[in-house]
Length: 405
Ligand SMILES: *Cc1c(COP(=O)(O)O)cnc(C)c1O
Image 1: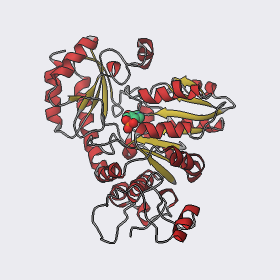
Image 2 (image 1 turned 60 degrees about the vertical axis):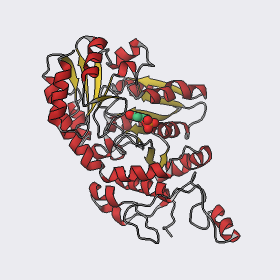
Image 3 (image 1 turned 120 degrees about the vertical axis):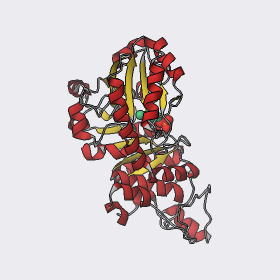
């Protein structure tokens, strides 16, 4: 039988002291009586009990073990434990998607009359949750320019409970000062939730910078091979127990055990992939920055990034993503996208396959043209997620396509 333990209540494990690469391969592994090398996939909805007495004790919480896979499951528990140890968090819970993680982290601890503050540059669906959904339930929200600490300060109210930011931001790769925003948030008695998807746990540790909660779309770099969706919420034991435990159990945005298994396998190679993709992205960013058909290039690893000092302070390396504005607007950007042979037009990111996205007509099409302009998302703006192909092939592909701009 696998060891039965509730993922968020696991005792300090012997793997937690290893370096990230080792944790990515070994943390959280539970072995069944068969001694399998690779993590088992427990595709089971529920569990059987030896006796009615044991079943009663399990439900009372007196007998440790699994009850129902909406609550916990050995494969899901392994994924959660590995993420908890990677992030250095006290506790964490997985969800079916990144948006389930964001929605739960925002909604579960709040009630009508509360107030949230968020940086307005964020993933389109996150903005929907904060700007449209929460206010319908009486939770007011204020959106600020995340780079302007004064705006954060002024937005705080006595009833402010949560602040939310993404850094680097999607898709313009602004880098927000997590430590400074955490301080403002804490002075107001609120908690800071950071969406760390773009930085990945390899390059940035928001909890160590002062954030209270970290959320991930595991769909991106953590799977990294475009196979499945998943999400993760990490924070203190108190936050998870008090605010998420019952909410997740009763509302059920649970990760599938099969997806948890795919994500566990993704974690094993996460550091290798992110490092290789970042190294290639840095070289490609330098090449594109000199290209005559590109008017503006943003890459968090370059010295000309507008928040280069903040990047240095809080990130261990740049990014697997590059943002750039092609001269000639939408028509020119579309000609380039259509001419690319290796980088494919899609909206995923962090994938082994390079992906190009035109945010104005896809991920951010819901916003008004003014809102997009405010965020620096022009009609010629392109987001490139650099994959694992040979960087020279990608550079040749980009050069050939830019000829068509
Ligand atoms: C993709 C993404 C999400 C949502 O994740 P899903 O797994 O697609 O639900 C949230 N935040 C950021 C920054 C993302 O890129």
